[in-house]
Length: 638
Image (cartoon, rainbow, N blue to C red; front, side):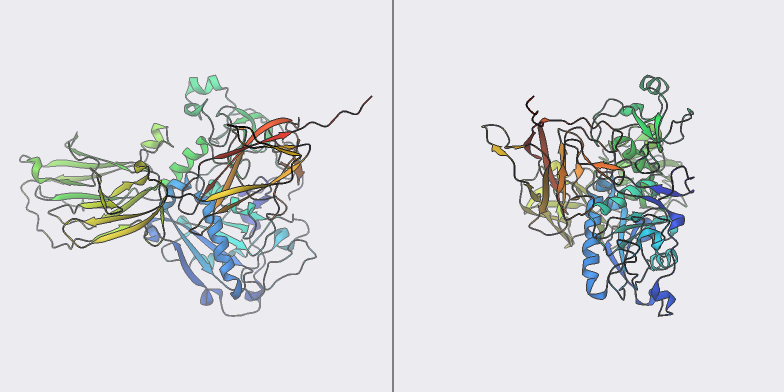
């Protein structure tokens, strides 16, 4: 780690909760052993595997996973590690709602040897691997153990194999075949594939890469409190020196969210510390993903991430050509993106007045409008109405609002083309969809008509007026079980089918042996301890796939369960004051404590712990509680 007092290199990012000083300029490690040996270029032996395809690569943001230290026999482990990292990402908003804006790729390369360099210590062996990944900043004794680097030139060459994905629309994540916690951020994010906590590096790093978010913790060197902010208002949208009344008065920073329960726990307000400083600067939440790995992004970060993620793609994916006037004897159309979290809104206007009866449809039939002589202006405005955004400037920006304009001349006659009616794009059908998301099916666009999409569930027709290209399954409140969803184009044999998984995964806590267990009618079971205790959460889904388990204490923010920071295979450990590991504090029962200088007062007494699961289909189980009573130490007799 950079010594205390050292200047932070430009372009680096500091990950929190067990992470390290991470920097793009530190990622250009020595060339891989295979490259040094003059063997065949990696690009000739690598395999590009589409993991999740939501659209053409040039129209999506592309997340590209690389693997290092996985032998040919261990490539199935790499695929499983990718799946687990992805499921962690999809369990967090806004990525859960906007995962349809991302394509995911895996570029598979087999290493000659298993593992990576200097794992876990400088005296550990160096391995012959494809990408030359290594701990200790590439085996540098002046670095720190958890800094995991990669051969940047090789990583870029492999990522370039993904057609349509360039530097402007991709993020590389290199996974090391290791269970040791470690990672890095910047141009090439790295993480240990087998460490559960490492899977949280990806969303944190995307917070930097996609959202331009700043780190919110109040230290630079681990275990050392930061200094005092100089006083000027920070450019960061997540930090301020303003009081809450001044934020409201000036309508500045996160004033629209003040006083609301934070998605990451507590209340959106003014919490001191951030930008690596302890005093004189404030952040929106006590803890969120940009401060403590494991918690959610709070509403302030989430709003910024929505804006920046949506700006990387185009809400309008296609439309009737606009280069020349069109006749009034045709149907205009727009194809939009399809967020999993909700439908986009389309408003049609003719000469500035909203066209009635369109019902959010993606087409407008000009023929019944009876347009008079002369040219007319028709617009389709596509807007994302997500509740994640409150700032009108963000809502009205090109990221969340796009308008297409046509000139219509009733004196023109459209030379109709023969366009076969068929589905053109749709929610993938090769894996189950969850019961909370939006499923879509787009069609071709004949000039003289609008193909109607009819939906049915378990053989029964579903009413879906207006925009028939999207179906919001969440609005149906499906009962648990497996359902069959079908979309068909009226009057044709074109048909699509999905399996709807409406049954969440399950989990059961495994607790260390209590002093006693208390059962009371109408109350959750209570476990009584007189000292530290452990909890293991293991999720299980009958459909397979990675399951994310989460827990929260006394109604605070949900935390992703990752085992224990030093060993993901060990259970989480609760203690009265928390356990300090490498300058951070983990497992304090009661009020969260993330750094040593935060309040360590033990919270003895009874606490409520809840747990839940998020499965690969996006289903979130109901929270299930139990009680824990932590007894204070007995006083010695005088």
